[in-house]
Length: 469
Image 1 (tube, rainbow, N blue to C red):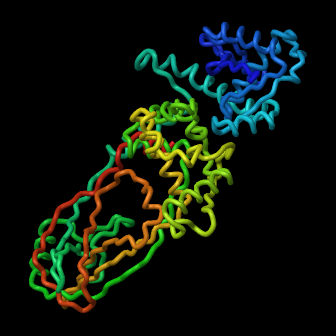
Image 2: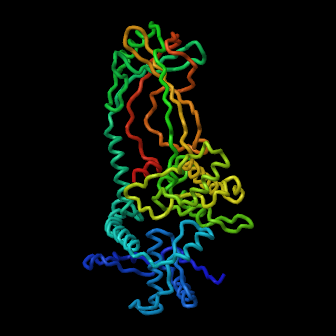
C-alpha cells in the first residue's frame, strides 16, 4: 500500500541510431539520447518521482538493469536540478531481487542502496564496443551482402566459428574402416552381440590416435572366415560400480542448450518463456506469482533457504536415501560474475503438475525442465554397475567385448537425466546381458563385417553453438 509502480519498458536512453555517438578522441565518451517513443514514459516517471517521498529503481539485477537505473536517475536529475546533476537524489534508491516474490521484494526494499557504477561502466564499455565494431562493419554488409544485416561483438565471432567449422568439414578426408561383430549364446538366454576389440594384441579401433586395424573389405572378410571356426570362451567378467553425480542447476547458457535438446526451443524462445515465468503467472486466487528466479545468470549458486526447501521436499517425496548427507557444492567457472543465483523455481510447494492448468504448453514444459533439474541437482548420485564380457577364441589372440549398464540405485535419475548432443556413431554393442559365469564356452551364432567411414566434425546445432560461444 502507498506504492505506485511504473515501468520504463526497458532502456530509456541509448547511443544515437544515425551517428557513431562515441567520441574516440575524448576517452571514448558516449553521447546518449532519449530513445524515440520513450519521451512520454520519461515524462510520466518524472511526474511520479516529484510526487513520491522515495523512489526505488528495480530494473533487472544485471549490468543492463543497472544501466537502465542509471539512465533513469540521470533523466530525473535533469528535471529537478538541471544538467549539473546537483538535484537532491538522496531519496532515489536502487533495489535488486532475483525472484519476484513478496519476501524477495520486501527484503530488497530493506536493503536498498545506490546505483552500482562499476556495473554501469561495464555495460557502457560493452555498448560502446558493440557500436565501434558494428557501426563500421554493418554498412559494409549492406553493400556486399544484404541490407539490414548487422555485425557486432557477438555475431561476428559466431560467424567466424561457424565458418571455421565449415572449412574443417570441407577439408575433411574420410577414412575407411571395418568392424567385426559376433552374435554369441551362453548357458542362459538371451543371445548377445559383441564387437571385435583386439586382434593379435592390437586394438581394432583406436580413436584417440585415429588408428584402424581393418582398413578394407578383403582384410575384413578374411578375418571373418578365420574367426568363424574358433571355439569361444567367456574369459573374464568385469564389474565396476560407478557413481554418476547430478548436473548443477541451470545457468542461462545451459538452460538454452537443454531446452534446445529436450524441448526443441530456440535460445530466443527459451528466454521469452523464461521471462514470462520470472515476471509472474496468474495462479487463480493467488494472483500473479513469479515462478522462477532471474534467468540471466552465470552462477550455479543457490540460497541456503532454497537448498533447505529442496532437501525437505526430496526427503518427503523420495525418502532419506535419496538425500546426500551434505548438500552438493558446485564450483563456479573462472570467468563467472556470480552476481545472482542459478535458475531455479521460487517455491518448492508448486510442483509443475499442481499449476499445469494455469500455464501454456511452452510455459509448462520449460518450468518442468527447470524444476526437475533443480530438484535433481540436490539429490544423491546414481549408482550404476557396468558389466563387461571379455570373450576370447583359442589360438589367434583375438578378443571380443561387450558392455552393459545396470542401475543399482537411481538417485537423482529418479527425477531427471541430462541429454547430450549427438556425436559420431557409436561402434560399441550394448544391450541386455545374460547371467553367465567366467570360463563358460560360448556358441558363435553369427559373425559379420560392417563398413564404416570416419565422420567430419558435425555442423553446429543451436545448443552446441551456444556452448561454443
